[in-house]
Amino acid sequence: MEDIYLGEYLKPSKDALISVEANTSGAISASRLIGPGTKDPVNVEFDMVTVLSPSQTNVIVGIGSSDSNYTGYSQVPIIIRMYKDGKIGVYNGKGYVQSNVEFEKNKKYHIRVSINLEEKTYDVYVTPPQQEEIQIAVNYAFRSTAKVPEDIGKIYLFNNDQQAGKYWLEDIYLEAKETDKVALKIALDLANGITDEDLKDVIPVVADEFIAARDEANVVYNDTSATQEKINNAFDRLASAMHMLDFVKGDKTALKAFINKVSGLDSSKYSTDTWAAFEKELNEANVVYNDENAMQEEVNNAYKELVTAFLNLRLIPDKSLLEDLINKAEGLNLASYTKATVQVVNDALANAKNILADDNASQKEVDNAKDVLEKAINSLEANVNTPADNTVSASVNNGDTTVSVKTGDDISVLGTLGLISSLSVIVFLKKKKISKIK
Image 1 (tube, one colour):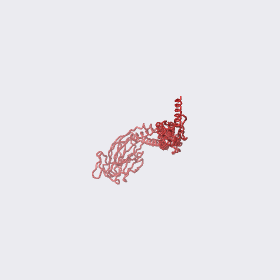
Image 2 (image 1 turned 180 degrees about the vertical axis):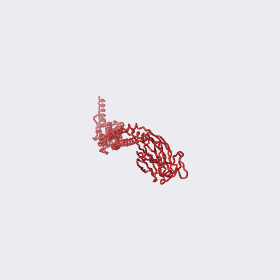
Image 3 (image 1 turned 90 degrees about the vertical axis):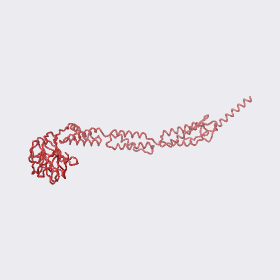
Image 4 (image 1 turned 45 degrees about the vertical axis):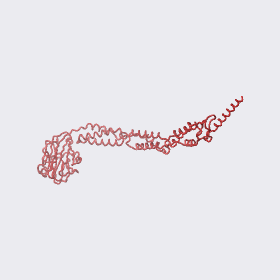
């Protein structure tokens, strides 16, 4: 109902149950039939309001059977009270128990009472303005001096000599809810059979959530006043946690063994790029190994990536032989050789220099560059139209016009080609002269 204000006071709605007179202590001020309800738990809810200061308020709400006609609150099995010290209390069997929940004038306090007729107990919840619901009574016994009700169906006000019309209840209703806990019970039967030993291989974050969900589900299942929404939420949480129990810890034995094997490698022996990639995967593998929640797929991936990075490591190659050959090739006088073979040497020399300067070159690339340059030098052909320059040191096979070079040997160019050519001319001229004489 809509709140109505008049002056400084909050006014009751037209459907409110109001204390109609300043009755004597313990006498009934007002009552209303709201039932009956017989299915456990029976829930009675209402808003409770006073426009008097707490020190002037000493009122009681009573709940009983639909056929009751109580004349004093000593006959009422279920009682909620607003004390003069500003606290809300509840009757438990043989006496009142005061809660820490305070009330103020001109404010609405929502009260929910969940009653178990079979157990003869009830729970009470209070929702202060703009706050969450607070439970102030758990399994409180019916008042021992009252007759045990067979149903719940009537609500009473006791004004205790206070002013008439200054205290009332609004939005009163009774709801007998038959909740369904079958699914929750089935889930709990399974969950309660899972031991700590069964959870030892489950990742901790999942195991912790499962235990918390199971504990909550047990509490809700045993709560006779639990609403269907609360039951459903408990089931959903427990079911979700149970589905995640397949998230087992990964076996990290192989990962740890490989981490230990490669952790001592010397970075100075490997190329910069391949070492950087390897170091990245090694660091990530250590993160996975130290993660207590890492699953097998994560462990397997970390192991695979680390092994791959290790296999891709490249040692810094030995370039000493290539460097020596480059130095010797640069000392050659190539003026006496054919243009084509000189070009081959120059191309091979340029490639060899690039490989020598490449920090990431492999040993295979270094060796190949040396072999190509060596072959190019050995394939140099002298230009027969140009006298050979004997300043180039090389060895040439008899009757051959190519230079022969061996890595590590002195490179020389034999100048006998010119001599052979001269001798050939002399022999030719002599034969011609003899022919003329004849």
